[in-house]
Length: 461
Ligand code: F0G
Image (cartoon, rainbow, N blue to C red; front, side, top):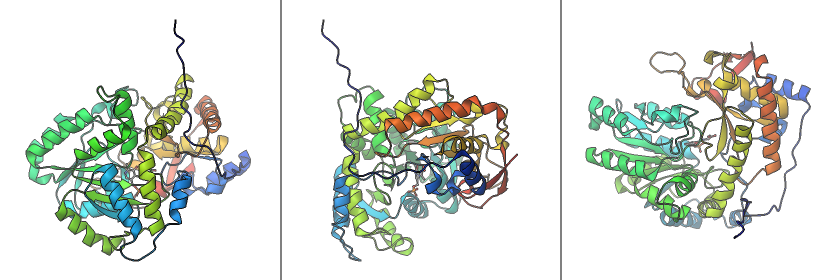
């Protein structure tokens, strides 16, 4: 009998430089979170032990990327790093035209301004906070057309990022295709728990939208992670590389916005990419108003160099295997311990289901906000609310939006923490779960007008 060899995933790199962490006492943490208004966004990073607030801009760069910084050509116009980035976006992603921006939301701002007219409808596979706000600021109205399973944390559908074609068709029938300039497709879907869309579904979306002249704007922030999940779980893709799948996804879309702070392994950067020369011309003109000249878009030359290198690293199979492998390692520990988390485990973090954590807390006592604060007090682990606070208010009625998903995101930065850190995180979540009955919830005492989750303040009930 042949022995079956089992090989774990392991990081395809070794560590060259370290950054010491500090751990406060429990009493100090209680004071820090009180002073932060029970909002983890308002904590000082120095007061955090393991920072799982976000995977955005928090990656560790490779030695190649750091070396790339030294090649920064800081010319105002026509920096060689821009041309390297442009060539990389063409070769790796397949989009023809590139407009760099300082980060993702700046690209969302540009594309929303260019494509949306007041009164338009923008369907999407669930909302993202900044994406939806820019659609609204341009006069559009976001319509959720994701499959119902995406709103159910217990559904194990492998592609919860899929579009429900009947919902999309119903919207087209109701408002007319001329009121729908584009559909926004995110790879992966952040707010659903980092859930991928399948190529089969995207192809069907392409077919339906093409029939009506509706374009596809691709939020490709985590496209390589989405591609990895397709490789793992979609029939017919096991032998394709992540790089090949990324290109295939992109080829089914017209324009793309990118927050390079995620997949692309840089601390700052983004872009708008398109295959349409007219949209490119308009974006190139608008970017000089809001960001900077069209060959730097708010970035230093060195940032564009690091991004070009990061993009190439991000589509390597072994990188994604370890990246997603680490997220799933944490997810499995929590699932095995019976912790309510969003299933299946997504690609950039593990999402705790605060409704099931705190069944005694109604949503307007901010269960996810409460859970993120409790977790910080327990262990210095910083997580992020992704529930009613993030969902904001309905611009027409002024009431809270009450999302079905009330989640706390344990977001894993790329190439930063070890398996031992994940063990500590799991132990702390389990501890907080055991104490869940004691939580009383929060009340909001300060609420900013836009994207309130970033700066809102709370007091304990
Ligand atoms: N789209 C998605 C899917 C995102 O996750 C983000 C950012 C953006 C767009 C906006 O990009 O931050 O570069 O302006 N998400 C971060 C997060 C903030 O923590 O999930 P940005």
